[in-house]
Amino acid sequence: MAGYPLEAAEASLSNNDPTSASGKNAAFCKNLAMTPNRVVVLALGPVVAYDAVIPMQVLGQAVDGEGQGLYDVVLATLDGNPAVTTHGFDMAPHGDQGLIEGADLIVIPGTHSPGPRREGLAPEGLRTALDRRRADARVASICTGAFVLAAVGMLDGRPATTHWSAAEEFRRLYPRVNLDPRVLYVDDGDVLTSAGLSAGVDLCLHLIRSDHGIEIANQAARHMVVAPWRDGGQAQFIESPLPHAPDQSTSGARTWALEHLGERITLQGLADRACMSVRTFNRHFRADTGTTPGSWLIQQRLRQAQRLLESSDLTVDEVAARVGFSAASFRAHLRSTTGISPTAYRSAFRAAE
Image (cartoon, rainbow, N blue to C red):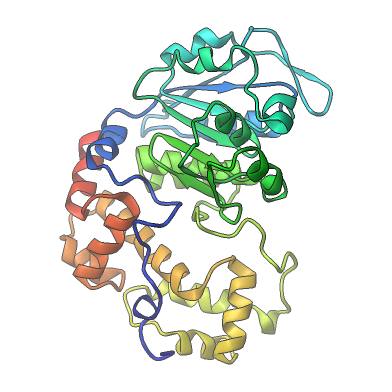
């Protein structure tokens, strides 16, 4: 099997992927044409300060071609009073729960609030506050903010994630949630959840990509000097936190693959470039990236294909060929990831522009 193209050797991204969007065409196109511009970060003390500022920092870097901000991010608390943080200092909000009424997106950052974190209970007034949101508003959580969404029943029967270290407690308190603590973030359409700390950055970049396209998300990532794209299904915890010795790294093979996406790429060929056996290459690749070579290659090809759909006039078949997909395979993978066809994807972004 090592001699076959990697996308044929591995299972494709499917509609059962818990990190995939819901796949509703109308909702996807609506998000592109009417992007959320008012974001309310609802802090429940003791709030994790790092989580609370992630949406402000990341979404605040998303600007259009004229330099105008694409998101207006504000901080709110239920009563409008400052929120104490887990490090002992207070965060002054822009207002109280009334800000939720006009929000396109509500983000719940990580918290040590005892109700949702220890007792499975929602803080007083939270249900009423969230009931004030618009019917089409999205809700997202960062890190242990997922406990808050679960406490109000918003995650029952749905896929979600949280920080890996809190997974056991989360499952005990909220057994009706389909928790996957392995992944970085889960996009379930109108409700999104992410793992801890830096995974909140990945979630916000994912939101920018979904709303405004890859180039704007990449610009925001470059400004913050972070990786522009870590797929939601990537593992939270990568086994090799320290880099391999130069002769044990898969980085050279990955760099070559990115420069030759339109060519036939095999697992054996990548292993040969890294001067490793296939078995050793597979092990080092997962340690380096948190995913398999086949899944990684599909992600890279899809990413480049989306960029071409957004920025070029190439036909769908030409785009597929440029990145190494067959036309049928490209359509299947893109629909599995976004829920829509390449033509609909391009039309949605052109309409947004």
